[in-house]
Image (tube, rainbow over all chains, first blue to last red; front, side, top):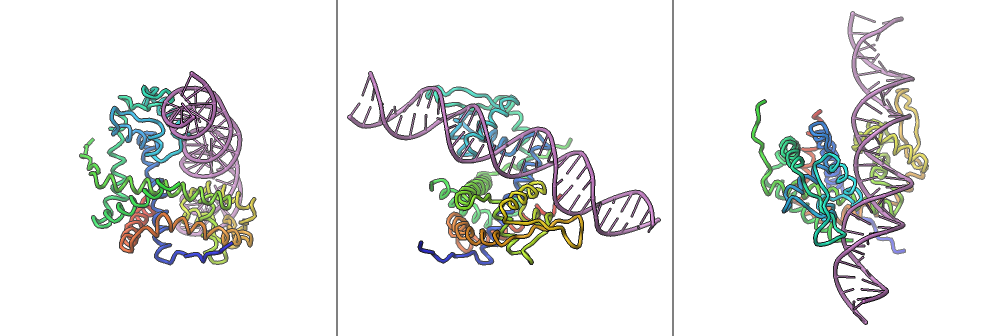
Length: 155
Length: 155
DNA sequence: AAGGTGATGTTCAAATCTGAACGACATCCA
DNA sequence: TGGATGTCGTTCAGATTTGAACATCACCTT
């Protein structure tokens, strides 16, 4: 096979990559810890509630929800079941497609989110957003949006 | 209790946060997929091998390794056991501390890493590093290093 | 109208992650 | 020297994630 010489990461690039990787893991850990302590929620669960709250009719199709939250379909099925047990979400069959399922945010779900959101936003600010200059924020956003686009479209 | 008004994220900040979150999850997924297909490794396992390869004597203490790779101690115990079964890593009791355990990269582990690294770096480049301008890379690095520092020192 | 193709959500087994509890050893100070 | 305190790595139970397989239904072409 044709062996192409590997373009290794130089010191700067490796530092960038590892800083990104470590920060994402550490931040994830911190968020998880805060949500668990405050509301017994996991981060994916919070994201599900947040996305539903923003959606028209406070409801969303399972596949679409899995896509925006970035979890597998089976993980979403599991989490929606958990949230349903907790009374924060309900399942409805989609009127326009008998295969489809709509996840609907309940009143209790809305109240839960209202109660938890401030503390969550606090963490996101304290460790990420508020530590970036405007220029850094803009640079990061444009960079991240570009890579997200690439990751979503490819394969 | 004194209720401080929440400083919600504005549209730009929310976009930044979600782009970061989505990108990290999507990239993690893509990396995991590539490593699994290429070498049957998980991402944490790859990081363990990579860190050991860089370490003096190709060995590292468990706690320190868990810290740099950003996994819990129990997760590291589990993964080192897996890698030991695969013959890529060995455990040695630390000479200077009988409580300590040294994870040592084996010859097979070194060869495995050499074989897998190019493809892995390829993915990191293709979806992140090569998509950022020099300015974006620098901005992201400084921002990430600052937040990493904050997350590592606090609590 | 009927079959082929594709999408939808769930189930299942397997792997992995985490925090808490634990036993073993180090270190420090009286 | 002898506890008191802390660190180290492991074990354990429980929760979560994933991909593959599956049954159901939609859609499109003939």
